Image 1 (cartoon, rainbow, N blue to C red):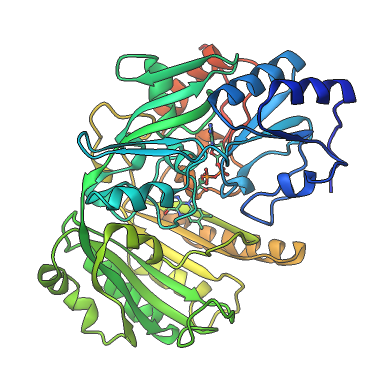
Image 2 (tube, rainbow, N blue to C red; image 1 turned 120 degrees about the horizontal axis):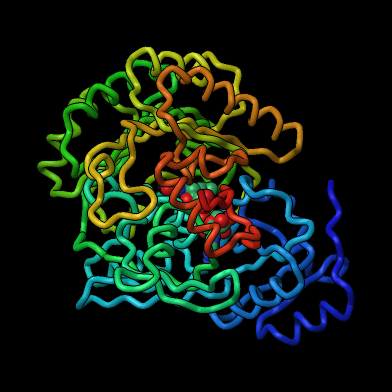
Length: 463
Ligand SMILES: Cc1cc2nc3c(=O)[nH]c(=O)nc-3n(C[C@H](O)[C@H](O)[C@H](O)COP(=O)(O)OP(=O)(O)OC[C@H]3O[C@@H](n4cnc5c(N)ncnc54)[C@H](O)[C@@H]3O)c2cc1C
């Protein structure tokens, strides 16, 4: 375990005096709770934790860090904390108290403060028959998710969440509050739409909502012994469906916990999960080839868009977790076989979930006026992970996740998906080369001294 550097009393007092929110430093009551991330495996040890109450607070914290020559790491929920570098000399700037969301049904847009979680947007948007491009989990942060691309249940129809952002409010690394949109700060506007949070601290995002009142969505559960059959059938099926269907194939080992419903508790399954933007009749016809395999449990139904948050069964509260992902140019039968060999019924594994999401559709087409991830140059993305209550469990899960990645190496795309790369990696490992080069230049303009710590670092260059 590393020990954070302490701020002097005088400096701590000055920080407290400048911030309306709370400040915690090592050794103080509340520090350990304040430094905690959603991912309980992360042991963040910053020199100070600041809970910002407003954009003005964010700007003041950033200015303070600059004046002290300190680095600063913005964080909403801490879902992305495993990929962060150590924070010993840095300020951890938490935006969790900035969760205000405004929905404008007339313009079909939402404005979400930096600490908003997806459920803060999807629920009120749903009341107007509108859907946001949220991910699978209701408590993932809108900002971190969107800055890293944002791949959700409507992705094959409407693309990455980043490319539906219409404006970003940002505190630049020198502490100025600016608005970035099609008419202002074009470089910042481009960078935050898929290039991560390396060029400033976002204080709010505005985004397009889509008219989706209901969809046909659900999961087919099969005993894990049928993994090979189910995943092969799913993969073949993905070649036949329209962009209105976004789906994934998965192997899932559910824990024996009271919050898991009785028929599923402690059991292992092969699953197909899917969401179809259309009515039940057409949806049922589309999934018929998979349904006719005879699932043990079939949850497909017409649901409101906000209920998509439950489809993937992500943990409802903070957990210790390790995982990693990879973009796959393709996932032919041999790739499915490799995956099932390592994680299927005969595997001795601590990996709780292994999923392959189907990409393509709108994700494969360069979005108009897009940001740093205009499209995804891969047909599938894999993510796998497991619960890690102890450091030893962390080592095991990390090694097994890496083994899955290695087994799929023949099908890897040239870079990984930003949001699913959970082992520390520079941004050139998770962005196309042209995007990374432009991001480096923007970083050199706005943050040449690397004051902002982001999930995937960008190394500034003017060349
Ligand atoms: C259970 C679970 C489900 C997930 N499902 C999906 C999914 O369906 N689709 C998908 O694409 N991803 C998914 N992810 C990945 C997720 O999108 C990333 O972990 C993302 O970084 C989380 O954002 P956050 O704000 O919640 O996390 P945080 O850890 O708070 O933030 C992650 C990073 O974002 C940046 N950041 C956050 N806030 C700011 C800010 N205000 N200004 C500047 N930079 C900022 C920072 O670099 C920070 O380190 C999932 C992750 C988990 C754990």
